[in-house]
Length: 104
Image (cartoon, rainbow, N blue to C red; front, side, top):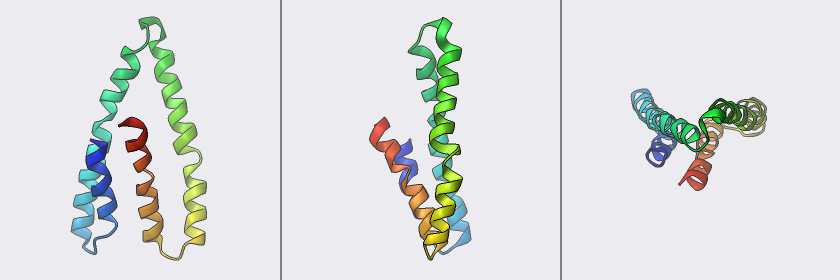
């Protein structure tokens, strides 16, 4: 699903029409987040029942440490140093490519 989401999200920042942007971004984000229940299921099924809470907790901490915490600083620095905000947003969406590399 992330493989389908990636080109849609990249394309969303290249179109001129607001309607196309909303449609492509909605479809891309829908497909990207549709993979989350499967990932959570794997996180729960690959550990003993007594460790399932710890498994989910470590997953959430990892997501926050690698995503939510550094991203405002990184995106802010990119916005200050690159001339066009659309380039910054395309680079942010391109970061989704790492998901394809590590999860595929």
